[in-house]
Amino acid sequence: MNANTNTEQLYKDNVLGNYGLPPITFARGRGLRLWDDSGKEYLDFCSAIAVTSLGHCHPKLVAAIEEQVNELICVSNLYRNDVQARLAAKLNGKAGGNGKVFFCNSGTEANEALIKLARLHGCQKSGQDGKQYKIVCAKNAFHGRTFGGMSATPKENVRQGFSPLVEGFAFAELNDIDSFAAAIDANTAAVFIETIQGEGGVYPAEKPFLKDLRSLCSEREVLLMIDEVQCGLGRTGRFFAFEHAGIEPDAIGMAKGLGGGVPIGGVWVSDQYAKLFKPGSHGTTFGGTPLISAAALTVIETIEDEGLLENVIDNGAYVMQRLAELKSKNPNYIFDVRGLGFMIGIQIAESPAEVVTQLRDNGLIVPPAGSNVIRFLPALTATKDDFDEALGIFESVIKNRSATLPETQSA
Ligand SMILES: *Cc1c(COP(=O)(O)O)cnc(C)c1O
Image (cartoon, rainbow, N blue to C red; front, side, top):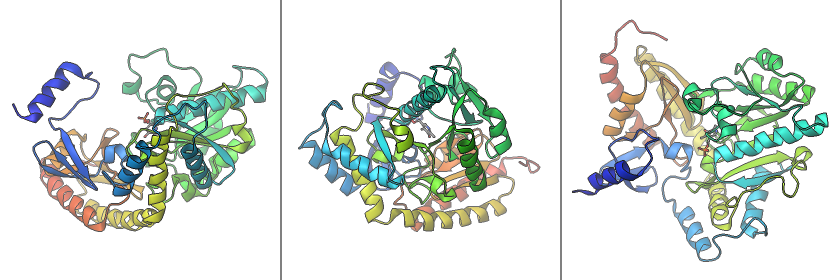
């Protein structure tokens, strides 16, 4: 029995079947490369879904974790730890400097904290718990798998079987300010959107829409809360994706890329609303412990020291250009190319499962999104050569696939 059959059996017998897993076991990673347990090499354009932002086992991240693991791994949030303080200062600086940060362990937990912030805000404004509690989200959004996150996520297959969900979520049309204006009523406490919808299929909120939404939220005195769990932390070439629109949200949720692979989530709340959280009003055991904070701090410092935002801007523009060419060469297969920086969605003429498998067989790992999109989410360290290699594999695979499709299909 080789290692792979053994792993496959152990999974079958012991791991909950909530993921549809392909017949492959990853064993090692370096930079943009992954190897499976048979030694086959892959180019990783999934990055654990926008998580391993420095690539696999970046030497600075490895060194920071090694150093911290020998100093102090964990203390309770009932006490201070210096690494969390420095990470909070770093993130607060990135968000403009006039706020406070709370650490948790995942994206959905960051969003839970934001949902609780909205409730606290509504309670304070109306003077009554449970009166002003509604949150307006976008159709096609994804905000996580806990009850709050799921309730902010209108997708049926995320919610199926879990009723009743949390009350008080309404859904408006992304990039349609009138739709949001109509959805906000006297019971609304906050608006909550992704700057670029990730799981939904890489749909960016447009800059004018974000500006109008900022004004609308200020006028109506509801919070503007932004989910930057996937698009944040440098992925679009700015530290936060909303910076492209020049807006200032009231609160930000982050996770995925923040720890470069270790589990961490965080929220930033502007000083005006940060005081709504008082001792005892929220908490978590593992958030911001020294080991995890040391990793996240190193991720941000490395993004700065290695000029990774510039890399994302430059190579992001390059790959968008190349994909636009591929689209015009393959109009019956590539219907749209969307996104910003290293968060790219390619809308194709079929559901993504088969092409994702063929790309993987040919050495390129990409995640699907929505019903007909594949994503490029490489590490922020990806070079022009990495993109050329990925595009070469992509082009050869889609050539075969588009040949199997009827000529007449269109968006
Ligand atoms: C992945 C994701 C989440 C959920 O994050 P988890 O760490 O899986 O809980 C929430 N919001 C967005 C935009 C995401 O992409």
